Image 1 (cartoon, one colour):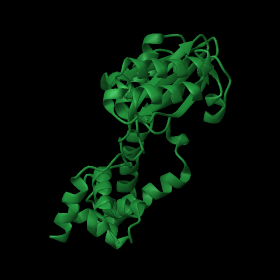
Image 2 (image 1 turned 60 degrees about the horizontal axis):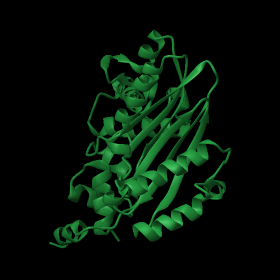
Image 3 (image 1 turned 120 degrees about the vertical axis):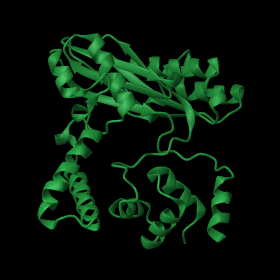
Length: 290
C-alpha cells in the first residue's frame, strides 16, 4: 500500500510531482529505490543522486591538533537547543576528548573521559538539564603526515562541516577544497572511487532514459557516455567545477597549487535521519484520496 508519507519522502528526494510519485511507488510495489529509478528512467526526476533527508537538528564540529583531526556530529531535537551555548560546549568537549584518543567506534568513544566524567555520563547530564533527547551520532578521526595539511570548513553555524586531507602545505588551498566539499556535496574523490555497481546502475538508468526519449539508437552509447560524464562531474570531487572559478575543475586547481587531495569527510547534520512528521502528510493523503 502506498502511503502519504511514502509519497512525501519520494517528492523530497526527487522533486517530482505528487501524482508521478504515487504512480512510481504503485508501479514498484512501494520500493523507494526502485521508484526513484522509475522516475529517472521516465525523465520525470533528473536528480543524479539520491538526496538524503535533512531532518534531525544538532551540530557538527571539526577540530585539529597537530597531525590529528576529528569531525563529530551530536544531535538534538530542536534547532533552538542546537544553538544553546551549553549544547555547543558539549559538542566541543566531545570533539576534544576524541581528538586526544585512539577510539575506533561510538561504543569506545562513549567511555572516554571528558570534563572529569565520561562522554556518556556528560550527555546524560545534559539531557537532564537541557530537557531534550540528545544523541552522539558519529565521528571520524583522521591523521596526516608532516608534508600534508588539513582543510576544514563550517557552514550555517555547524550544520555542514567538512574535513579534508591534502598533500602539500598550502592551508588556503586546503580551506578552498573544504569549502568546495561543503557547497557541492561530492560523494566520491574521483571516478576510480565510484563502486562499479553504482556505475553500472547509472549506465542502465541513463540508457533507459535515452531510449524513452526516442533518441537515435546508433547514437545511444555516445549519449549515455556523455551523460555518465556529467554524473561523474556531479558526484566526484576532482571532476567538479571549482566553485571559485567554475571553468576550472577542482583537480586542475589543486594541481596548479602543487597540491593533491587525499581524502575528505562531509557531515550535514541530520542527513538520512527521520524527523517528527508535520501536518503535511495529512494534507497529501487528503489530496490522494480526493
